[in-house]
Image (tube, rainbow, N blue to C red):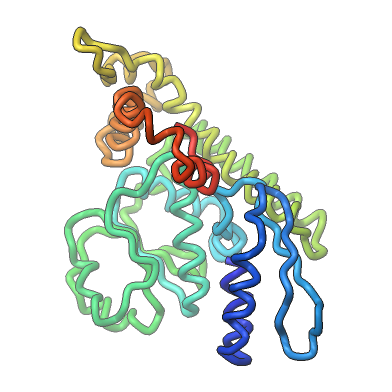
Length: 311
């Protein structure tokens, strides 16, 4: 995101400034997480000045801006959106600015890690394609405020509509506050309040390191939620007589002592996100056997390094 901002800055002055900057960037060594590279600015009057570009310590959050999301929505509203996405409902974000809409959309999807949204995802839906919101299947789309008059004329089925400009729900199902287990939801709120406390204590401009630390705090709060609910899943992946890894679904759900978590799992386990997550874990050993030669190839090593992927 920082690089794109720098490219756009140069393009705004002259398109001729973009090429030398990108060439200099491509010739620089790819930094390890948390490390800095120095690149010549190529701005008028800058001479041989350089800018420092830091790669975030956690590359998974490299292009995520939780500041925008929590700047637009309160903690409770964010958690209710999160709960709606876990149950794979239809969610529409509305904002006046394109940048706000895009950054908030990508940030809310990042909250689902280690799961991935499996359905329609359009950060900014063009007005000409607005009919997509009438689709009966799950989706997560972003709309500019200018599309609202036309949206109100469409027969949109049950959906959560979130106004990023006013921190309110334009439409909702009225059960968003009760979708997650009550104790876990309270713990999640408390963990996220720590982020606000840190920001309020140090209102000065944050360094890159502090910014990444706050991003990690948010991500870890939601990961802790998943650890409390499905963290024991690996204990219920067994091998059958053919050597295939199989997930024992019902035994996994019944092993949870908390009734509220069991109820939540009864719904969440029916989602495509959960199914995809478990299927990936079931196939891991088989896949590794089938691509043994690929795992040691230089191309794969570079890809794994760049994506921070752990198989």
